[in-house]
Length: 372
Image 1 (cartoon, rainbow, N blue to C red):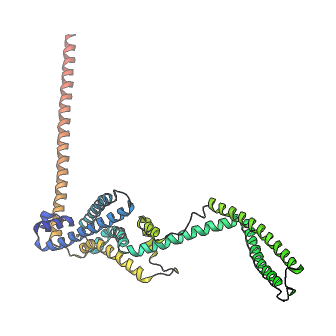
Image 2: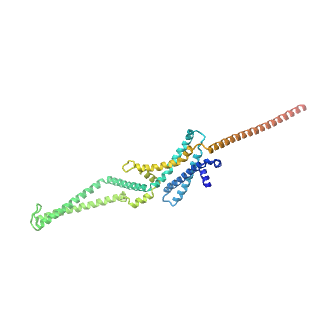
Image 3: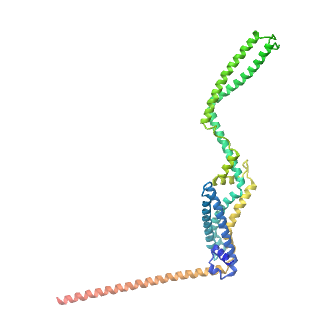
């Protein structure tokens, strides 16, 4: 239990030796340290999950995810620990809030960052369905674009082929009608279109000739239409229209499985909107609640430190800082005094040497004058 307590004290950024002297402050800093630790743990899981999707499909995806998760969690832990430990309780409430405001903004940003990958996992099924719909609609738009380009490019050929088909259908209908009338003429059925004379007579030969002309024309039309169909089919193949088809369920599942982080993040954002473009309030509130929860969780250590009253640990810590500052000032004065004494000693030594040199020179000059 002591090891766990000391570990959370370390997480809170507290000065352990000072904190041990004030038991009334122990639980507060255990709570702050635990909050920082679990925030870093969630950040590690979130970062690892995000990196797993970045390297999805690679044999080293799991290794990269674990490595990045540990690095990301350690970075968040270090920032949170610094944010909390750097808040000074000696100023007024407004001063403390002003001092903590940049740290609160940073905590909000961190909360948003670490919440996003976990939202991707929570809404995984909905994201997959949204991605499938998006991929299917994208494929449809691609096919429609190719089809429109093909229609614009071969407008005359398509129109000609359509005319040939209409003529073929009309000839086929006329041929069937003419063949029926020919049978009526041969068997002597009296109608508005037949003579009623049984046998293969003059009228029957006339109807046979008309029927033959239509059948000959049908062969020509069918031949032209076959050539045009073959030409248009080749054009479709060259333009890639025949090779593009709608995705089936298996293909959509495969695409959703290998979707990258950017696609999944886009799909998560689209979940907050309905098909008609209006906002889906239920999904939006669910996503927002998760994000706000992590933001609050990230800001909680700062808020706890701000809301907690100044305790004996804070007073003792300020005294230690004052003593350290005083010691630093005295140490500076000591270094200055030593430097001054050293400089004065060197200056005095240099002056004495200069005096001796001048005196020696003067005595030598006097001795030389006497000799002269």
